[in-house]
Every structure is written in structure tokens, then in C-alpha cells.
Length: 375
Image (cartoon, rainbow, N blue to C red; front, side, top):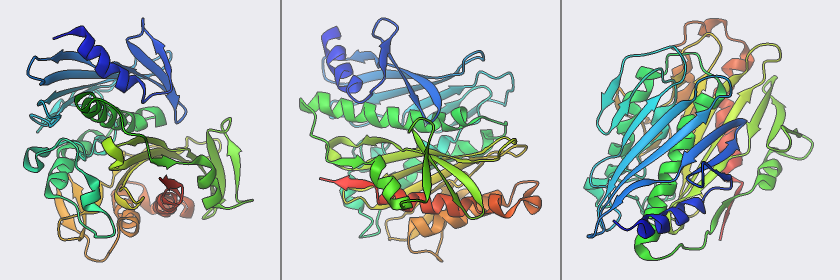
């Protein structure tokens, strides 16, 4: 392998982050959603036949506490397809531990409490699809279809999430899985840019100003030094951090994620990590939410998306379920989160404001859709 080949790949990868280079230029440090993270530049080998064996390491920086670390390993063929599903290992910095979990393509290690299903496999799969990036123009929400390969890929990560999200958590750890999701998407895109000799101008964008317009003038206030907005609805105050975005290779899809805080004054805030995938027309076709509340186990919706027949489905570690009452993801996600919350031990004692969290997720997805510029 030539170091110049790996350096060339890393130049594409670096261009997708706005943070600062650290560790002698081998990593990028950045702050998002009120927490600090670091992503190391990909390491590994690029063989003479074009195949790649790459490792991507990420850190949730926790200040005086021990950091959380995630490591993603991916093998690509010469066309940028996955040779097998990526392996993902997580180790939490806390003293709290859960048993190790191993599932197809994923290895969870240590005291982990993250929404692993957010690594939804929209980029993974695809020995059945024949491509490591699922070209989402073929699954536009207007046709209400999605490939079988995507559905299978999603289940890889959902299989783990509900088993390990049992430890009380702060918002930074909760959101760490979304950070890793974007890193994997950016790595996949960088590999294809390297193989095809250049990047394609970005045409899908999320606009903070349009998100505020979607909420409505006079209905919010800027918060957290302009990184978030706070608003009052459903009898309580909420804060949404402006979404992180990453674009699939060739503008074939836009991945958005954000953290939503249920503001609880002197009490610990509720935290939602929300991740959504939009197609080339800005239509939502997949969403998932992970919710952490004080004194409760973390709960997840699994991934709510479409199957190849255009039906709305929910993919969890318990299986894949057709949600026949709904015709769109944005309708179904509300019900999916409410059902997950009802498993909590203190649900009957929740305030009306806390029980309204599924509605907050639904309206945020609508605001996000109104904040996408195509072209």
C-alpha cells in the first residue's frame, strides 16, 4: 500500500468535517449538540488490486471522566462495495458495565448506553444489493418503496440497541451513535470519491434559518450561543439543537440527526437522539429515535421505514413489523416512540408534558423536512 493512496482518501474524509486537526494532524476534534468528539482519520491498507481494509476510531470526550470510544472496521472491494458488514465495537468510559454483545457485523463492548440502531445500515449491505451505498433515488418516499437490502442492514444494529441501553446516560453519550453514523456515511462517501477520482458538488443542504422559519416567527428563542432553539409547546419547554448533516455519495440521500432536550428546570433534562434519512427530493423515508429520561431505562423506536411493498414497517431487535395503520414514516414514528415509552416502569406517573415527547419528535421531523434545500 502506498501512503499517498491513504493520504488521498483521508483528504476527502477531512473535507467533510469543520473541526480542528489535532494529534499531529491524525484526528479531527469538533463540538456538536453540546458535546465534544474526536474522529481519527481512517487507517489501514489499500491493496494493489484496489481493495481496502480500513479502521475508523471515534471518541466522545467527557472532560474529567473516562472517554467513550467507538471503533468501526470496514472492508471494501475495488468498487467500494462492502465485502462484509462493518464491525462496530463500543466501550463506555463509565464504571457501569453490561455483558459483551455480539451480533452479525457488530461487537458491543463495555458499559454502553447508546442508540446503536442509529447505525441503520443504510450504508451497509449489501451483499444482496451489490453496493455499499444504497442509491436512495430508487427508494423515493413518493413511491413508498425501499430495498430489501436496506431493511436487512437496519436489523443488524437494531438487534443490539435494546439490549445494551440500560444505563442512565447524559445527552453526549446518547448522541454518540449518531456521530458514528455520520462518520461511517462520510467514510463510505470518501471511499467512492477516491475510487471515482473526485467529489460531486453538494446539492442537498439543511438550513438553520429555514428550521426557525418552520417553527414560526415569535414562537422560539435562540439558545446555546445560536447552536439551538428553545420553544414552548404542549405545555412545556423544549430545546432542539440544529441538525448535523452528511450527504451520501452523489447527493443520493441526506442523513440528518439532532438532539432534542425536554427542559426540566432543576431536574435532569430528558434527551432524544433523532436520526432521519431523506431522499434526493427531500422526502423522509427512514427515522429512529432514542429516548433517555431520569431514573428510566433508555428506550428506542427501532427504525421506522418502508418495505419493498411500500408498507410502513418498524425494525427492532424483536423483528420486523408492518404498521398497517400508517401510510408514512412521520405518522408512525409518534406511535412507535409512545409504545416504547409505555414499557418504562414509571410511565403511569409521567406528566402530560413528558407523555407529549412523541409529538415533539414528529413535529421536529416535519420542521427538518421543511429545512432541506434541494439543488
